[in-house]
Length: 638
Image (tube, rainbow, N blue to C red; front, side, top):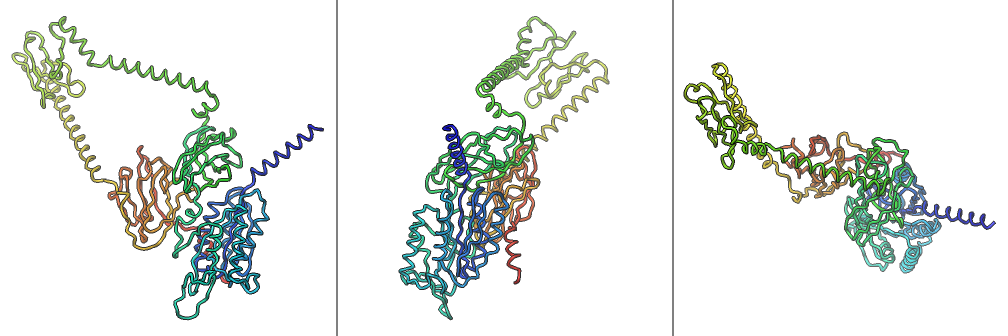
């Protein structure tokens, strides 16, 4: 009986532990849907809300959307298991529209407090409030008759409850409406957007009281365009860069993750899992500590399932950190070519034995290389010449002798027969390779043929007495000399042209100032021919006027991973009117005559790698599918 009770208790603990591990976070967005935010609603829909889902919502989380104007509505409760669930959330955003006459801010906060408090306590709670902070309740609201003192007291009470619950709260502040006078709760004028002509409306602003009670900062939206780094600045999530292509690897390998800490405090990161098809493939927990505004590399040891077939795969990976730490992004695709054997796999499976065998093999290779090097050095032609010179005393007539020192290239040839004492001398310097000496006496018609190239220092062969043989030898000597002169002239010309090309192609300066023409933004996409495009929005970036983004491999803003290139071979500059391509490393752009190419959108560029591989790319203006859907929905007439 005791054994049965122990077994039941053990099963209960296992179920509880698994449920705690599987529990995600509750992401709650409290959205102002009153008419005062109408001018900014498209900005919120196109930029802020999609970025919140991208940066906060993870697999296993639950997303909650609450809207408020004259009344409070629970719009959607969506558990997130795959990308289709995220698409449902974005689609629901498109159906919201700010048509309410009033803005009951306090009712929205009160409902959010009651609703979130009823959710499972084990889940982390994150609340994002998006509003202009105006308090304008309808007549039927319980807060319609509240005095400013009572409103302030209610806000402070709700803020204390939220702070005590330990929720993560973020406030995104939208601009005030036009033709309005905005007052603080003490009746002082905070903002006056009226022109002084015609009618205007007075509102009370309560967001500053709420954020100060929570001791959090507001993220204020200013101007007609939302800044590109707006959501990043608010949430400051650690940024992760996944390697795009790991190349050839075995089932066991190391995944290098480059992480940047955007917090103002030190971040301790403990990687507890890497999910692939809902299976944790992390072989060992990895740790990384990053100081404020610093970067580092987290090396995760990955063990793929043995049933995974060999070949090239694009693998979706999702990171899991201790304490439910979130990163941007937390999921990505990694391309690899799986093969049956790799050194990393061998060391992982064989352990010390495999490592010892590897050291023995390396030692044998080094010994063999040293042996062949010694043999090669002792068998060089110079050693043979020295050995021949040592035996020159035993040969009185026909063995050639090579001089040493400054006369090493001068060869003395002895004639045979009765002319053995006549010495044929070859000139040195610029005439060293020319055949100039003729024998005298009865052998004057015998021409000494000097062969250039690798035989330039060898003893000259003598021609026979036939006139046609002498003519043939003389023609061969002339032809060799002519070919040699042509070869030297070609090489000399090539060197000059190469030096001129290097001097002409000097890269652009990455510190050049960008003159801003207009204060506009542009969404750019890098399209690389034949490169895998299933990488999300890795090569889609919003650029503000005066910004620049690099192009290349490794950590470049726009990434080329089809062929290996170094980082920052070029950069895109935007001045608010047009984009310019600045070539920082011209050696990879051999077909471009200039290092500054203006109006580079939709133009195709060809880059060449160190190994001669050509890759074509172009920059395009990105057409967001969410924007297209929003235009379609807003064009429908009721």
